[in-house]
Image (cartoon, rainbow, N blue to C red; front, side):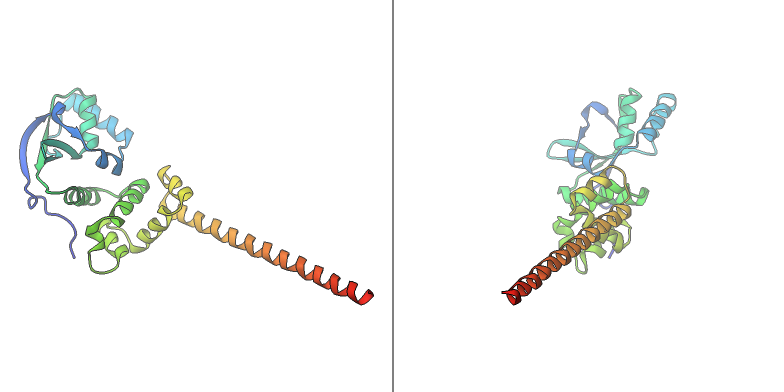
Length: 219
C-alpha cells in the first residue's frame, strides 16, 4: 500500500508569492518538526545575498480563512531574518488536518531522515490517528512504511514513548535505539534487584523458621 501523496493530487495551486505578514504558523506542525539552527543561519545569509530560492516554495494550507504554514518553517524563518517581504508558496486546500499532516509528513520523510525527537512525536501522533488504526495489517508495519523506517524502529519508539525518562532522553537528542537499550537495561536491573531482594527475604524467613523449630525442640 502506498501511503504517500502525489504533489499535484491534493488540490495544489502554485502561487507566485505571498506577503510574509499574511502567513499564520500552525502550532501542531511547529511541534512536530524541528529547525536546525545552523542550517537556518546559512539559509538566512544566503537569502540576504541572493534572495529566496524560488525553486523551494513553502507550503500553505488554506483552510477556513486561514493561511497556515505547514511545511518550510526553516525557509520561512530564514526569510524573516533576511527581512524579506514576500516568499513563493504552494497553496493546498485539504479538507482535514489529518489529510494535510499525512501529506506534509510524506514531504519531510522523502526529503530527509527524521531526527529522534521528530520520530518520537510523529510515531505518537500516528498511533493515535484513525487513519493508521483503520489500515489493514499491523500498526507498527504501517507506521514504518509511512515513516520509511523499519518496523523494529517503530516498536522501539512506541516502547520509549511509554516511558517518561526514556522519552525525555530522546527529546534531548539521544537516539531512540540508545534510549530503548538503556530503558531495557534499567528494567532488567530492577527485576534482578527485586528477585535478589525476594531471595534474601525468603532466606531470612527460612532462617527464622529453622530457629523457631530449634527452640521448640529445646522446650
